[in-house]
Length: 77
Image 1: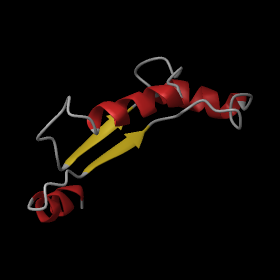
Image 2: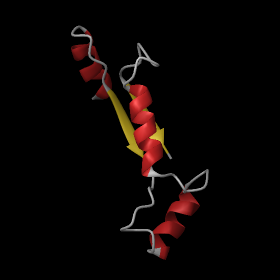
Image 3: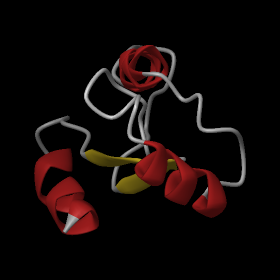
């Protein structure tokens, strides 16, 4: 779907990408040991992945720092 929409919107100079975040520690799940344990087992890196990191990635992706990237899926886990 991302590639199809990127092809359609590219002629209007609009980039389309998808971001698929992994487990994010929030105030709602921080103390749920079972969910944290499951996420740690599935993750390659430590799960201290913060919401600020996702926001930083989105900011970078939507800035002029990266041009010509469209139709991609970014797994942030």
